[in-house]
Length: 256
Image 1: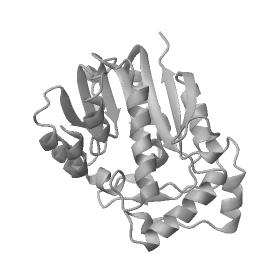
Image 2 (image 1 turned 90 degrees about the vertical axis):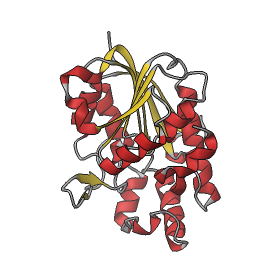
Image 3 (image 1 turned 45 degrees about the horizontal axis):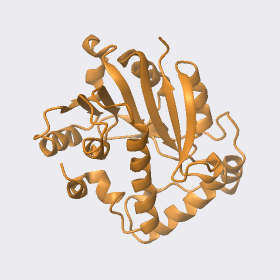
């Protein structure tokens, strides 16, 4: 798949090819960082949990670290079907339903699990961290990114989202507002959950959270309970503190 074909992806259209230059740059940097942090995945068995339109795989296949097998997992049958069609010419890439990963044959089969911009939406993050732990072989790597929704970044992001929503860009018109009190608590949030999180439901009965109230520091503590965290970095500009960044990256591994 050529890079030019990335525009066919449902999420890429809203992110990598957004009408907003800032949104395009932020998301392109996120995938650039993901591919760079995938050094060593070459010849390995890699799972992308919550793969979306598989933009990450499309880029990884063109890198020097092309995996031996690449499995993408999603909950939406429409997304799985679309990905299977788009990657039909790539036999090393396959797509499964997220629930399929609960089967015993997947236990301990992956050298690396990648999960980008998923955990902020999960209503049961502990279950999925346990699942990832079971899927990884001993010593297997976890590469996980989540958005920063606390600190000064929160104020900036809300302003950008409101502007994007006003311009009719992507789905930002559905961004939930914060009260002044909620915004203040988010600005000074520590490692405990600072405001209640709203649970939404799909017509099919699946529950999820939106970005509002997500706190990456609480997730960090959950990851520490199961994995050895090797590095915590930020993007789109590495080296900036999390409170001034758009995403946080956890690079961890399963103990031998």
